Amino acid sequence: MPAISPVYSFLKFLDQPQLLKRLEKAVPIALPLTGATYVAYDSLTAPDGQKAKRLVKGTIGMTTTIAFALAAVKLFREKIALPDEKMLNTALQTFSREGGALAKPVRELIQRAKSRVLAPKQVHTLQNALMAQGNAGEMLFDAIIPKPHNHSAVEILKEIGSLSALGAMPVMGGILGGVIGNKVTGENWRGALKNQSKEGLYQFLANIFLCNVGAGGALYLLEKTPVKNRAARLAAMSAGIFVAGIWGGNAIANFIGENFFNPLCDKGPSHMVQKLKHKVNHHGWGSLFKNLNAERHAELVDIGIHADDMATVGVLSGLKWIECSLPFLYTLCGYRSMIGYRNGTKPAHHAKHADKHADKPQVQVHPQLHVSHPAAQTLLTERPAFHAHLANGFQQGAQFRGFQLPQAAWGQVAQ
Image 1 (cartoon, rainbow, N blue to C red):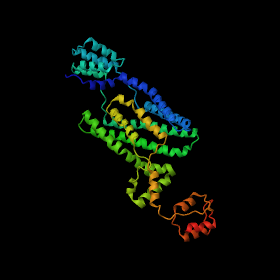
Image 2: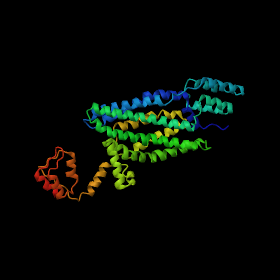
Image 3: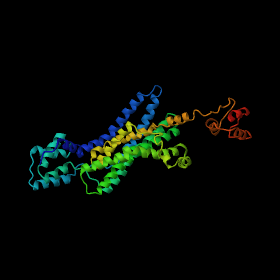
Image 4: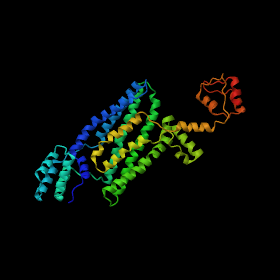
């Protein structure tokens, strides 16, 4: 049998159960340290007068996000299992019965692998020695460092749900931390909650759920075919991620957000329904697909977060070591939800329409005019096409709550 490539041996080094167990134990320590470092940096670079407030909000938000991320790992992911001693002994007995013979250094590596992490060079030596012994040697090596698990169609669906739940919890933790942070610092937490909820939905759909669906859906379809090649599986999952996540995730998330979730957060269910009816009745169904980036569009950081998609591919491919990176990547999604990140074009969108109507006559409000009702303000400032007879009709007793127009003002409205 030809010698094993060092690259392939390095991948097997990463698959060692003892190494995975160490990584699993390191995550609850490394994740808070990473979060605390970022919060400290963000606070120090904040504008003068904002440093203390940024530190308080960042600390609370990062704490809840990380707490939810670590809780999600315990709830939705299985713990790393160490090598089965019974299976390893059975493999050793089979190897001996079939006349397998190993040099003393190789036998020592086998014993060492039971309780310690082998170095990449040691894994390479062990793998070459055992693979040269035929099927019995290969079975023994697989007992020491198990092969990645190939998921069945049913297991894929379970993994999609598990990974999506793993990503949803840090997002919820980020939103909760944002609310608490704003209340503690005396800011308008109800107003901020709208943007936090909108960003949370965007993060979950565009950067987590749809990517999992893309990868898992492609693999699910591939499982229905005779193709079992690992390279083909990776290619199919990568294509699914690109279509459903990177390429389509932003559009799908913004379609749901712009037409349903954002109006719901802004003014409630009735406003959402009215806005949908208005769009469809006045501009047709195609209007639902226009200006989808009004509040949020993808940027480099979002594309960087799609690194978790490759982690998804790894998890669905049975590569356990990649799974340890998911809490870090999903914590970033939660933190951006905490700050209610919005980078959309709505101000520019409104400015464009304001410019379009700049040449139209504007209402000059009389200096004696006192307007206290928002509806009246809208009528006076945004409806310049009032006619004289409409003004006269209002003059004859029309009132808004808390809204009385002095006599001299009606002439201004009528102009």
